[in-house]
Length: 373
Image (cartoon, rainbow, N blue to C red):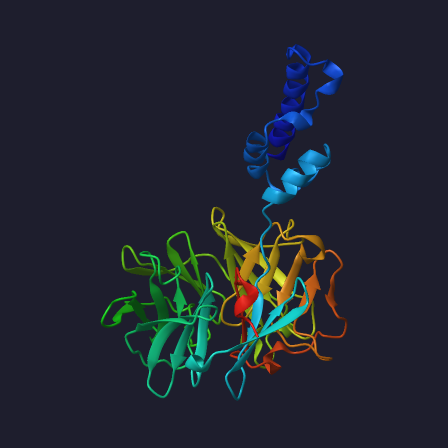
């Protein structure tokens, strides 16, 4: 694909040169490729990937200006911290290493469940209320009440989308799980019991992602349960669990497991205090987890409740895994570089189980910073 783009760019430059030679009324030496109409140049450069956009910006100053104006680079998620007391919430931008604050009294007494598309899903244990909140606008969307323990509740899209559906799964007995679903605007949750294969050991600590119309649930034992909301079916995937070192199974090891999806691919991150993180990608064709030695420019943002993946981030954030663990010395997260095989900062490789799983979560950044204190 990149070769085709380079070929198109070469043909574009050659066409400009040919047009310069045949144009009437102006000398050839006064014509340059920078005289391509701005609107057309913007249209062309806006279709390029980040890498090809940067290459095109080296043609001349005019192309540089236009390329920068249409350059599309993903924004890094922010880390949102939930205070133990008070209504002041902290937001940390790892790309700029800046911290912002917001007062959110509407979240008082609630517990974070999930985050996606700039929305938070929260649960208030005292009243068993479930609701969405956009922290940047203060918009709230209430849902039917549901008794939750600590299980993760995932949702497919922003609650303002018609395709939004919520999903959670709970262990009933060794051979049965209860799947609960709901849509914004519904008056109650729908709960159905499904027969379950024994290797899939469900618990409140399952990891959930929504990928290509399906909810994937990673169990304690590493098996994948798959729920199809369109067909209301549940099945345990035949893919064997990823291979992990023996010392992975330590106290609170379930907190060191993360799952994310991007563009139809599913990734699992295993961590423990004794070894470097192990990252696996699900090969659905061959039904196997493949250990990744490189992220190919992708960046993963791991969190106990919901994790994210980004491509086309700029600079040193590429090919890293960012963990939502609070660092010592006042910093706000820890990263691991696959290329260098080490954590940043050093000596941060201790048991992730020490972290409060409901202390923080990754969330998409706001478009406007004016709402922050």
